[in-house]
Amino acid sequence: MEKTVNVIETIDENGNSIKFELFNMISFEGKDYALLLPVDKEQSEELVLMEILKDGEDYSFASIEDDEEFERVSDYIESLEDEE
View (cartoon, rainbow, N blue to C red):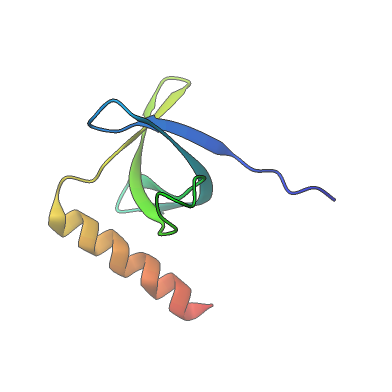
């Protein structure tokens, strides 16, 4: 059985296209977030956390600008991992 890979392409602040594999999605405090793994392993092998924004049927991904929000979401994800 072949694994289905969801690839998301985003544009960074310099206009460069970056492709990510959708690793996981979570809901926290009324918002949705995505854990993304860079497809190009040369860029990084670290998971990237982004907020999922929905506009009708379209989705986009945004960096979490608020450091406190980022920390709360990160802590929540770590607590989920600890439960497993």
